[in-house]
Length: 183
Image 1: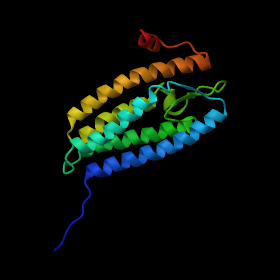
Image 2: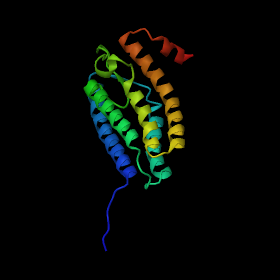
Image 3: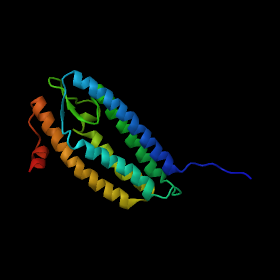
Image 4: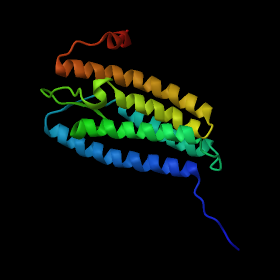
C-alpha cells in the first residue's frame, strides 16, 4: 500500500506564521533590553496584552475555521509573500529599535529611511494586509472581515498612543490625522 504525504497549504502557512512570530518575539525581547538600557521609554503597555491575544486568536481561528484541505489561492499567496518582504524591510530598517512594543529613545532621531520615507507606520499596514490576505487565500472571507475589523479597532488605539509618544519624545507637532484620532 502506497501512501502519499502532502502537508496542507493551510498548515504550512500557519506554521510559517507561528515560527515567524516566535522569532520576532525573541528579537523584540532582545531589542527591548537594548532600548531599555539606552533609556527608552515604553508607552501603551496596557493595551499590549490585547494585541497579543488578537494575533494569537487570529492564528487559532485560521486553524479552527478553515478546512485544511482547502486549496490556496496562488495570486493571494504571492501578495502574502510581498507583505512578508515588506515586514523584513521594516524590521531591517528599524534594526535594534524594532520591537513589538512602543519604545521611544529620548534624544534619538526619528527614523525616516526605508519604508518610513513613505509612511509613518508601514508595519501596521503590513499587518492589516496579512490579517486580511491569509484567510482570503483560503476563501475564509468572514474570518478576514472579523479579524480585520478587530485589528483596525486595536490599531486605532495603538497608533494614537504611538503618535503621541513620538510627538512627546521627539518634540514633534502631531499631524492632522493624529489630532483627529484624539477626538
